[in-house]
Length: 121
Image (cartoon, rainbow, N blue to C red; front, side):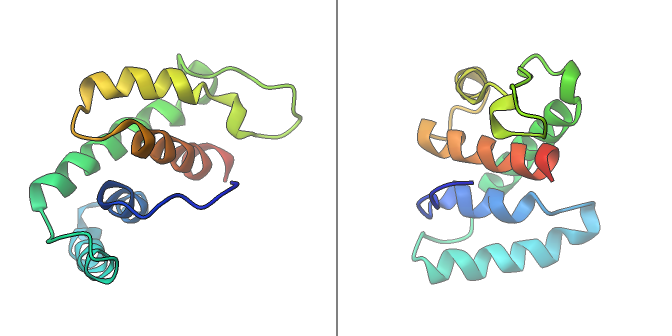
C-alpha cells in the first residue's frame, strides 16, 4: 500500500472499526481504540466521534462492495484488483461534503485503506 499514514485520531479509529463484523465486536474494538489513542497521545476516547467514523465505514463498505457498479469504479489496465480501480480523489471530494469533521488527508488515507480491505483483499 505504499507509505504508512500518520497516526491521527480519525485514522486510528477507522483502522480498528474497519474490522468490525457486527455489533458484538463494538466493545472489543472500542477497548482497542482507547488503548491505541492513549499510546499515541491523541486525546481521550470520544464515543460520538467513533460512531461518526463507524457510519463512514458502513457507507464505504456499501459503496466499495458494489465493485463495478460503484460510481467511483474505474477499471485499471492491471489484470488483478488494484487501488487505482477506484477514483480516490473523487471519492475524497464527494465524501468530504458529507463527512465534514474529517480532514482531507485523513479521508484520502481512509479511502485507500478501505479499498484495500473491501476490494483488493
